[in-house]
Image (cartoon, rainbow, N blue to C red; front, side, top):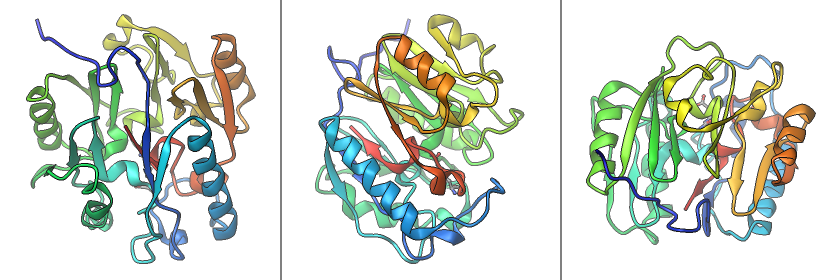
Length: 269
Ligand code: CIR
């Protein structure tokens, strides 16, 4: 039997730090399949500021990196690294246009994590495919994250005492990353969209289903005593409130246009 431990110790879902990067001038050049039109940069910057304020309100110290005007997807910092409380790993994003984001992330992580490991070729891994549930990691095999990447991350985690389980989402419609449809709420509860709900690993958890039509809201974030939920998904918001959580809703329309959501805008530990 594998021994797993919680990253967050006895206080599950406790986070103290976040790294973020506001969108740059070239944000409209980010990758997208959303078909929701071009983002408005000023609105995106405003939404990003509100996001940072929410993290701070939840008790986190937020490190704001400089906007990157060369790498349009660099605001989606979650994809460039995997961060535990004491260790961090630079990924190797699956989209070639995002590869340089890890080098750009390095100076932001170094002050906190002097030794940075990295995913090596031919491995690819996006942080959005990694969902941690109290020391157990679910890793999506996706259009962005390949088996080599999954194996390298699994080994890196095992060396630190954590277990990992691959979840193949390549045939799941609408899921760019695993966390596009899955979020751990703590308290043994997992949010999942219908296309993931039958996965056997979910049998170990209390499932919080996402109402049809509100799938985008699955990418929510439990931070300390609060669950951050994308604004505009009232049935999901009500379901989370009914579980007893304090909910804060945030408008992220401009990031949604670029296939991003709440989790991808920060690295958290
Ligand atoms: C991309 O396609 O890579 C970006 N436009 C969106 C990345 C979203 N990342 C995430 O959900 N972790």
